[in-house]
Image (cartoon, rainbow, N blue to C red; front, side, top):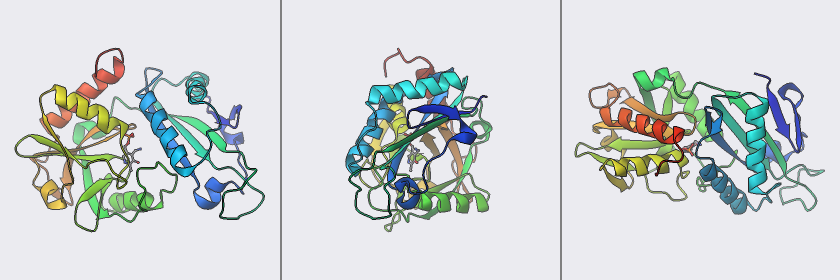
Length: 288
Ligand code: PMP
């Protein structure tokens, strides 16, 4: 893969892609990002990702460096230049670099816009076959988790705690014992009465694009959906659990804190929803 990145209007080799050390993304995590999957050379559910990007920018009062359609063109150009068939496109927009390190918004700075593409197997996933193990950890993040900000330190620590415990994802838990979401994914459980539960959208979680698509597909299958908080105890007792994200689509969860979920193998509904999501992603013309 050629490894071509985008920095403020220029396409250049990844190794030569640079931004200033005064960039506010670097100094303050003053920026936002998006990640969209590419399957068969096509960006999946990209309108939803770009509309969330617009919302994140609006919430932080960062001016979009380009019209949204032009950002989509940059993504498509990166897919083409990197000859990317399957993988991810990452976008990041920060408030830019001022000549100082003042906390207040700089008057003259123009936003920094970088993007790159990464090759990754999205469809063929061993984690989808085996399922993933989840560790619960306290949610230590700030109060505006609905904004996809690059301030990801709490998620980095949560993910590493999971990896250290031989798990693949962390589910973060609020002060009342309710799961908010995964370190980089949305958390779902299927109750014993076949109700699909995921936390309601609010400032406490990121509104997942994959979450929304999967919920539509589940409703089409006749599953009952509930948008509500669920406790760690309820999750332990679930019939099935799974996570969703642009980069992993739908992944079955087979244990939480070492307790097997259901039979301890990927659940039938989780596997079905993964298959339906893939079918939908590859047939964008089909109704959602
Ligand atoms: N929650 C968090 C904290 C995330 O980082 C992600 C991945 N971006 C998600 C949920 C899933 O969102 P999406 O389905 O849009 O990738």
